Image (cartoon, rainbow, N blue to C red; front, top):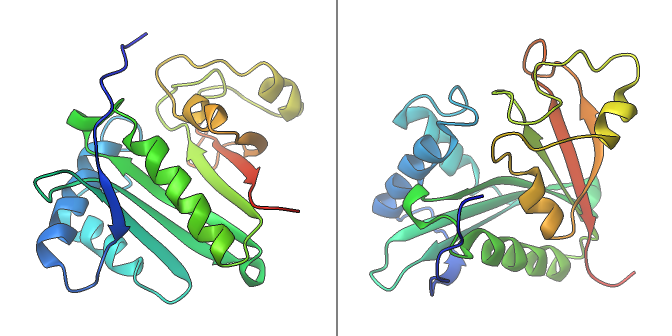
Length: 194
């Protein structure tokens, strides 16, 4: 198991639509951050910049973590669903050289606060397994999908365990979502008071 690095001090703030330099940094982060797990998600800079630009819509949250040099080291986005009761965490990325320093955890905690402030009660996310990183990848999950989910194993640093440590639970799977044996694993968490 890879070691945890020393926590990195960061400041989390809104990403603004007029910050072209920072938008470029975030776009590069997306390409690099998803290269190992979902290389087709952001194949080029244009696609990644378009993803960042979409995060400025009114029904969205877009936050970045910046280091003491004002460089972006992490980004989280969110999309409102179900009249604001539920929010999709999409995406979360930390610059590869700054991973395992607590940045992702800090971004998720900050996002949870933003959701609660907006009246949200549930956060969900999809965490694809396109590269066989879990025991669900490469498998025919039908007809007994839940049996496979109950016995899921992390084979190669798939992020579902990171989200579990933050209180998210697996609430569903779409087998073959990205092609045969490439499922999307759905996770969710209740936030705020109920």
